[in-house]
Each structure stands twice: as structure tokens, then as C-alpha cells.
Length: 428
Image (tube, rainbow, N blue to C red; front, side):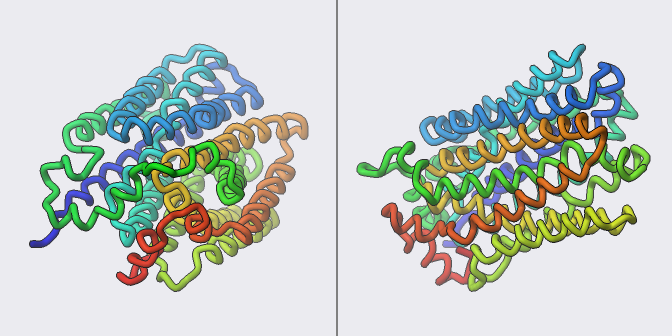
């Protein structure tokens, strides 16, 4: 009997939601111009609005991850997607800086549990040999979804106006919820489309995400050096990445003299290239050490950002920034799979802690950017230099970060996590 392929439906649901979440969060960067004009916002006020998402995302990340581990992915994801879709729509009725900030803050609270719970969903529904590839594919698709958002958002804003454009994006979340409610089960054994052979294939994954007596408590796990290094390198990664989805279109218009339409087109490049970085990393042969890929990825990103700041021609400079994003996104599937290796039954909690620090950077980076620009009267150099420093710091973290060793030290089962994957010729 051949195993059924219900698990690939789970991968499809995860990719669809990941793309949707990025489309909805990236759209505001393209709407920044008309929003600033209509609501009469200053640079620092718009920076605070950009940062509201990252702040709430960081605050609610850990509670949402814990809920996913305790209550199950199905229940938690359904509620949070309904919530963030509502606040996406409400963004379009904002009448002041304060109301816009509140709506974006609540939107971020809704999205906070998305990727930790998707990581847990994939870790419970996929055998080790398929897990990294699925993570890589998911992150590649999110980047490409984000890359498609600038022209998509510009078209929606031109067609409906920025207020109704947010309502249109929100409706997509309702469609996803209807499909997810009908199809998904937390336990593969409860799904009617899973036969005995596929269930046997998924047994190691089900054991990995099941809490066993005698395991350490989640708080003790989060305070281990490996988890702390994991979340700090992700903070540095996100500090750079949030520039691409917040200030980049404004930078291209003001510092590089581009029209809004051309700025939107050029803003696609970092996310487009980043998607290829994630995909290539996930498909890399198992013999390539993941730590080395992450170290050189971040180091290459820092060097390319430095080159970007020195290149005057716009298109070559943006290609350089795109390659910087490619290099840093090589680390994405590696970081998220490390949450499974270190976290085990606390996968969503470790992933939430990592993403919490990442989105704290999502608050700090755009707010700091707005303050720097206001105080330097539009000088972008200090902001770009801080991004280079963050990329170098992230690369140094991977000199000491070793998820596989951490899994062994905390009593994990490397045979389940790695040896099976290697024997079947897949990435660890």
C-alpha cells in the first residue's frame, strides 16, 4: 500500500496563509503616500504606525505560541486569522494617526501566532526529510507574495482607493478560514484522507511534537544559551529585513529620485531575490553544513549592503540590495527548522520566542528610522550603516549556534531528528 498524500494539503494551507499574511502586512508600505497625505502624518508618525505592527507582534508572539502548543494549531489559527482579517479591514476606516496606530497594533496582535503555529503544524504533519524543504518553499512563497504586493497594492489603491483596498485584502483571510475549518485536523490520525501507511510515515513527527513526562519546562528551555543565540540572530536579521517592507519605497522616492510607480517596481527586488535564497537553502544537499550557510549568508548580506550604499546608479544598486536579501534569506529555513530541533514538543513556543525578538526589531527598526531621518533632515546613511552592523552581528551568532548539538544536550533524539533524514538523502 502506498502512503496517501494528505500531508501535502497541509503544506498548501501553510503556504497560502504565509503568503496572505505577508501580502496584508506589506501593503501598508505602498499605501504610505496616500495615507500620509490624507491623514496629514509626519515622518515620525508614519514610523510609529509602521512600528505598531512589530510591537504588538512581539508582545503577543509568545502567548500565541504557547496557546498553539497547549490548545492545538486548528483552534488557535482559525481565531487569529479571523481577528487579523477584521483589523486589516478596519485599517481602511482610520481617521487619525492614533486610530491608524491602534488598528495596526491590533492587526499585529492577530498575526503574532501565524508562523510559530505554522511551524508546529508542519513539524507534526511532515517526516523529517520533508520538513526543511517545506519550510524553504513556504518562506520562498512568502517573499514572492510580498514581492508581488507592491504593484498589486498600487493597482488596488488606484482602483478602489487605499481605504477599500484594505477591505479587499481582508476578504482573502475569510476564504482561507473556510477552507481550513473544513479540511485541517491537528492529529493526522483523525484526518479521513490519511491511510495507515502515511500515518506510519508521520509517526516520528507525531512523537516529536508530543509532550512527554519529564521534559523540561518551556521557561527553562527558553533561557538556554542556544535558544538565546537563536533569537538574537533573528532579531538582527529582522532589523535589516523590515527596511525592505517599510522605508524602502520612501527611500527610493526621496534619496534616489524615483517616481512612486518605479519605486514600487524596484521595491520588489529584495523580496523576489530573498525567495530564491530561502528555496535554494532548503534544497541544498545534506552534506553542506547549515551553520556555515547561515554564517556566510549574513556576512555576504553585510558586504552587499555596504556595496549598495556606494553605488550611485539606481538599478545596479537595487540589484545589489536584492543579492543582500538573497544572502540573508539563505538562513530562513535554517532558523525555523532549528526551532523544531531545539524545541521538540515546545516547537511553537521556541518559534514564538524567536519571532518575538524578530518583530521587536520590526518595531525598533522603522521607528528608529523615522527618528533618524527627522533628526538628520533626511540623511539615510546612518540607517543603512546600522543595517550593515546588524548583519555582521547575526553572522557572528552562527559561530556558536548549533541546533543539533542543543537537541542532543537537552535529551532530544537525534536519530529521529537527523539520522533518518540523512539516511534517506535529505536535508537535516
